[in-house]
Amino acid sequence: MGVLVGRKAPQFKASAVINGEEIVEDFSLDQYIGKKHVILFFYPKDFTFVCPTELHAFQSRKADFEKLGVEVVAVSTDTEQSHWGWLQVPKDKGGIEGITYPLVADTNKTISANYDVLAGSYYYDENDELKAEGEMVAYRGLFLIDRDGIVRHQIVNDLPLGRNVDEAIRMVKALQFVEEKGEVCPANWNEGKSGMNATHEGVASYLSEN
Image 1 (cartoon, rainbow, N blue to C red):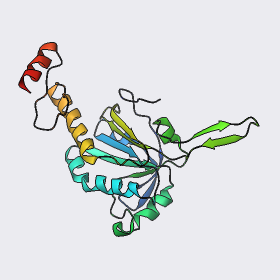
Image 2 (cartoon, one colour):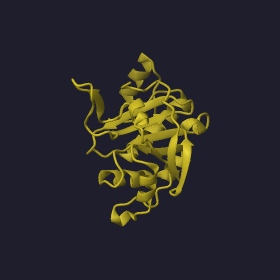
Image 3 (cartoon, rainbow, N blue to C red):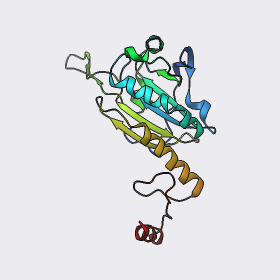
Image 4 (cartoon, rainbow, N blue to C red):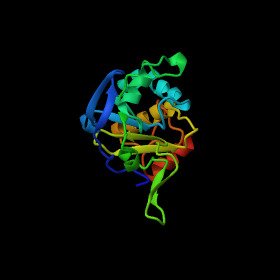
């Protein structure tokens, strides 16, 4: 699928750990339609190195996302039991104890595949035997989904490259500015800056003032 911006976010039902401790079945993004924006982000593996830095970084800004009416949801191809086990490990020992947003278990890899962030791929060789190329884990994809379930922003980082949570918040604020004001956000827009009308006159006026 590649670029999902402007399309309905692929839906799914899967097991997840919520509130840092409870395993639930049939977790879905449907619960947020019409109610909240969603930051859905994928990470490669539990019990690794860059991943806990990202998970804790999103947790540290969870209150900021909540003030904006945004639900943060994380996904990896690990099992829900693996998620739960990692949640029992303290932060100072490389664990993710204290993470309270949902951690979805994409154990059959279909969520990652539908969002086109699965790093590996399957193929059949000359003997008609199923083979795999690369690891079946998720790249560091991030998707901003609006209240109508439409993807409005996405980025995909390679496995060693951690993401910037401040940028995710900036994009949420930019989207909400567009929704509320009906104006567009120019380059390097930040909260408190003016937008512009999507016309030749609007662009000329903005460029003359900035």
